[in-house]
Length: 467
Image (tube, rainbow, N blue to C red; front, side, top):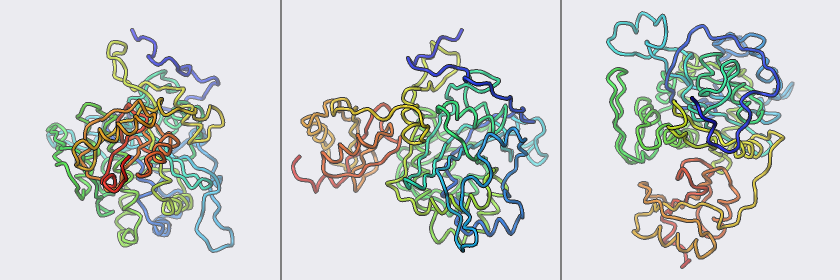
């Protein structure tokens, strides 16, 4: 018997208006994804011409046959961009655009008729498919008015309403009704946010795309080891700064065998997405274009047109780090005594506030003014000096930030202190930055999970006057 949700505030399980049922996909599969958010950072602007050379279709990467009913879930064609008319210019966004990015990993055991080349291998091999559970789900908002790129990670175990199937894990929506039903479910979860387009990418595509882009450099925050012979899944990464190729990137992105499970994996995915975004859109990408186009044609499914894709890439290229926000759906872990399955339980009050602030839902409330004592601050020492975290915590306490604590050391030595708005409240992080007089504000969910703000104290601490 399932008990009521633990959150004191929850949206009714059924939508207020009836919805048409979305046809079931032809294959039922399950899987584990890897990452999302590769859209704006994976292709150079010249990809547009290359895609047109491959196909005369306006949506050459669409690999799913959407019914008229399914297509109506998304924005009308031509509604998102200005193609320039007679002017010689690249397409540009005319309004904020929300893109739902999904990813799947499908094994031979997940499908009825696996391709002959992956049968009889003695283990559960990967199948090039977009069907299955979406174990990573990201909603990206490209806003040409604010110049901001907002990225919201939705945990795969989020307990949400899926039309025709009731309250269940949101990653099941892709199995039952593909990208259209998934978009409907995410929109309902986020208080009616419009989903304009979708992108689906499978595990093979992620690995090949990272290789085509030349890999990505980042700091691996801990040793990662895991072995599953049944899938030929082997993870073996050492802590430290590394340049990851496609295979090692998958190891980093798929690792979830620590105390926070999938939520910890989402945090690492956000770290990866930021690093990839900053490193991929460079002149070297153009030289890799033929390989990139070949990969995405085989391993990516989207209803974006060539012109829309060009506009999004052009926007992403001009977006600096300060205007990229990495968010995570507010919620909490379910109590194992309350549910048979493990869920991420949405906090709908906080979701409505976040959707109003970052996705312009038109309803909801803005951020409340919080006094310094009401901000939960975690301090992580990232400069190697013993006791520095305690010193900073004491200084913050003396300035009225009484809800502050030291959360151990962060292994990476940082040159610049990061003041991380863990729950998306930039104003709180900026107030702390102003009080300290140093550091830079990052809006992302990679800090201490239950904090409002996490401070990773860098070596710039040494150059500061006595606090």
